[in-house]
Length: 325
Image (cartoon, rainbow, N blue to C red):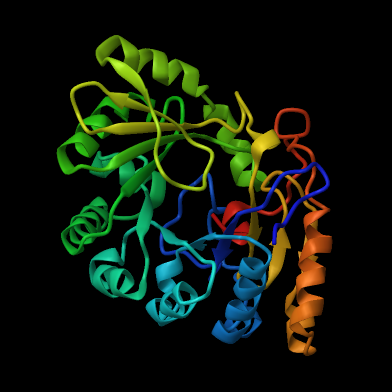
């Protein structure tokens, strides 16, 4: 079976938030002093999550990424990962994390069926990292090295590029990833909620970053497995692959293959749109599997043709950690 939206895009990828909580405070993601988290009883429980993911896989979704907030704050996450990895049709189970707790959980995640991870890391300068996140860089590097040691592969570093904040750290991040065998992906900042719109003051097109790298390295076209939208190049003579994710300068809406499910069971069809479909109450009222499948088909037709980040940056009210990374 296939899950096709009204614009004939096949939905193959679900990003599943398991918590809206995070132990870092990146200024472009979460408002300063924010404490308006959802209550745990409002999160989908593991049985409810498994039902929804099973429905998506019946409909043809083959890739699921666990996100947050910070997903490793969700108790017993490896247990959930093991349950999901056993679902028929789910070929790719991955994780996005800030890696603060990765050192403790890397082996259990690998054992549970997590095939690969993405780690948010915007600088390898400890003082700048503190300014951006209010956290300690040492925790992240420890987690990354442990993940590498237990065999998680590939490990992708996601770096949100911000003019005047970390755009001069690009070459240092290239060197870091080259040294440790990580894949590097640059991401343009997006106007998600008030925090994201404020961060647009630091927006820089990734074309500029790619041109700068091309002056120092020989970049050749490359491909890499994964369900996301990154366009890759490889640094000639090395194993380093660099991805560019450009939702603002070169949007990829015509090939978008993904939707997001929040920790509370809200299905968001587009990161840049407020259209949503609430699933939690249906699950708790005892909806049948066949009706759940139909609800998901109906919800997918709310997916817009494209986001309006450029035309209407004020459109999305919610902020990123509420949506799911």
